[in-house]
Image (cartoon, rainbow, N blue to C red; front, side):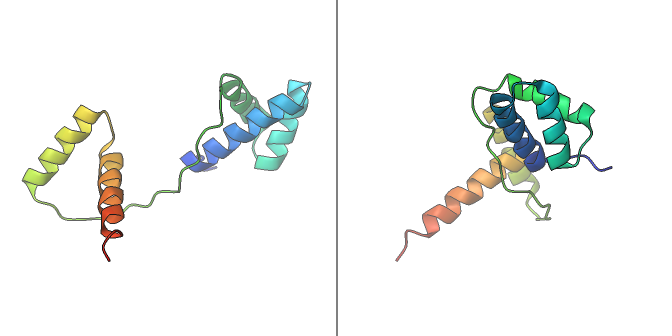
Length: 109
């Protein structure tokens, strides 16, 4: 069985959080979560345990896809340094830069 994606994990944690508030019994919540997500009861209990510590819902992001780009070694070094200093992943750094660039491009006109 494949691992859950980050999006699936976030959705399941949010659902578990809701079920904890609605169900008086953890066993009922686990059974309902297992059935609705097609996961084992053991895994449902894990999601319920994680959701118990949440103060607010987990944000659900768009699924990610990989694509290849060619950049100069200098730019890659600068990008890696920026990501490290900002405590972001390389992907998150690039995504934020592209979103900012695309957002600026919309203002023309």
